[in-house]
Length: 363
Image (cartoon, rainbow, N blue to C red; front, side):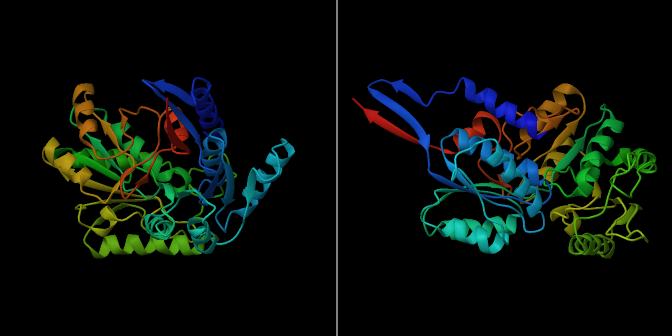
């Protein structure tokens, strides 16, 4: 996806004007200066390019602080940038803990913008620090995204669309569709479709071609996911699939699906960042929308159903991205969230605008 996103931003840039006339004014768009980019470990290469491409095109210089447990990817990226001949000082790499270095960037008076991807809690801390210099932030934070299945739609597609996002990268992705909402009278059929889908999911060595789910990034992350699974059991949810650590070397967690989940449960409200899907039932479309929006997050979403109904429901979701009947995201489209899922947008023209100041000259 990284190359497609770069092309999408470049395509948007081709017809972009840094100046325009408006009555007796000339409107100028110009770079802020120095942009700090604090990137996560789950997609280390993608997240660097997603930030620096629009920032550099807008005329800024960048200081990249990669996640402390994936610094080598960033170092290789920096070496590639140097080989490409970018002038010294335009791209800068500073390794170190996101807490310390990220805090420093958000408080430094010479850094005008900080773009951060990571957890909502860390994002809140950076937001607070940035207030000391009234610094602009672009934040892509957590999610607890819903997939709504409507009667008359393709149930198999709904299950596969949700499950695939939860299995990709072991569920360590903020845009995963971790809440599957289905009509109450479709629950039993949904269970059968889920069990049939998951029976062929192989967990193991990610270098093997037929492996679908690999290990968690660390023991700490594995323990966190297992704690959430136990919390779900303690709160009364039913484990339909998985639910355990695999008895083998490595930080492997079984892909897990919960049923008998209510939206007030911890596993339905908090971002788990693991291969865990929860199934929630509803009576009416209005209730489905209410449940979907009953979250502090608003990053992604999905709706599967008759086209007209699906579009109507999608428009009501308080989330930045919605896939309708399996639709895939174009890299030219903006990516970002509502509510505590972040500020600003990435990709395409919308991502470019976040790295530009606007000045009006009156004649």
